[in-house]
Length: 246
Image 1 (cartoon, rainbow, N blue to C red):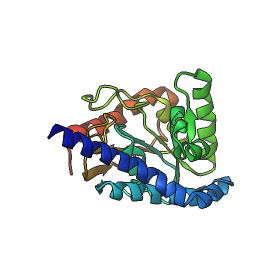
Image 2: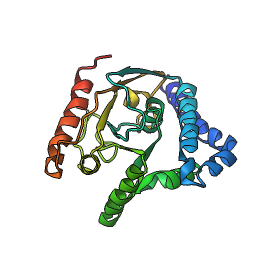
Image 3: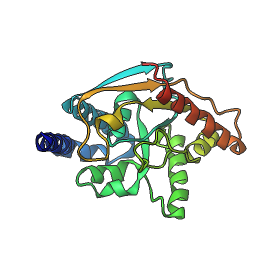
Image 4: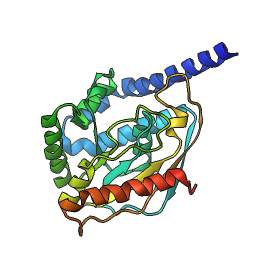
């Protein structure tokens, strides 16, 4: 019985990677065209949303979203969420319909096909390189100045301890939001770790609950307040994880 379950979970995980790559292969020429100019990024973003939806439903994941707020058209935001699974990327793309740019770890560029586009459309950070971290701020500032939103998983990576509900947040997202006076938009993902954890022989289909929280305005915060804003945001997500409202 254990062998049958392990085989099924292995096939299920391989199916996930198949869905990731087949969409990119089929639309490869269009995807390449969409990244040739920065002004065409909204086209690429919509194709990426299609990729995310294709994977989520192809895996038998069914997002259930509860929204406390609607985002204002033309307003840039700093989207932040807890980080527990590779599906966080897909679910963020599914949840937020307006173009945003991910800030993500450089290591993901090594994934075949996916890494090619990831490298050219996301803001990459090498967590071991202080210079890389400084460059992230410069690039992110440029994107915000051009009207784009930014998405950062402020835990800085998936916690190695899978029993940890929520790791400490790093300050980068909050510093950027305060400097540019853009709202923080907290989002809580409840079920991603259960649906597709990093431990290979676990996971399965089912609903994926998402709570879109009210935004936090930053215009009255100074850079000295970034730790306070960090704490407030983390507490919103942590309380939702402890006491789900959906």
